[in-house]
Image 1 (tube, rainbow, N blue to C red):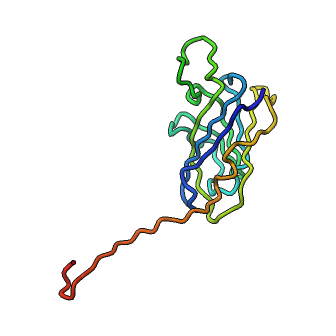
Image 2 (cartoon, helix red, strand yellow; image 1 turned 45 degrees about the horizontal axis):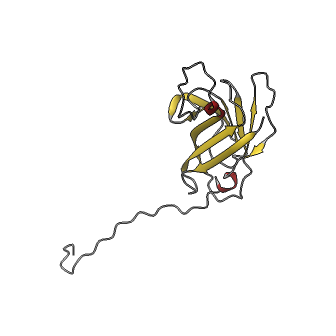
Image 3 (cartoon, one colour; image 1 turned 180 degrees about the vertical axis):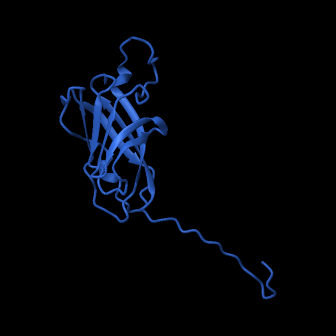
Length: 164
């Protein structure tokens, strides 16, 4: 068993802002419901530890978050990236080897060095399917190097006080 591909990207690199992260993981095997997937290396955020970080904007789909930088979730039918088959069919579906999810963290207050973001998966008995594997794009997220937005209003008045 191994990771065929794993990618992560973010919605913003602005310091001290909410940031939606998008994660896609494709395995060399169909992931059974309940497979535990752990993503590590998401360090430096301001998001406090929580038992229920919402996934894919769906209140019923959650993951456990540790402020030190790890996210753990159980594979559910809501996370499969399955465009070609019906999940209700009792047939083997190669698409069950890919999960796609999004979740929100709060960016660091200040810039930080690149991270090493990795993934691993275990079965319900805690046996690892593979060793930690690097996630593409992990070095480019949560660095908080973007400039914040500046909002201003400019108006011009004539000598008589009328807007020009």
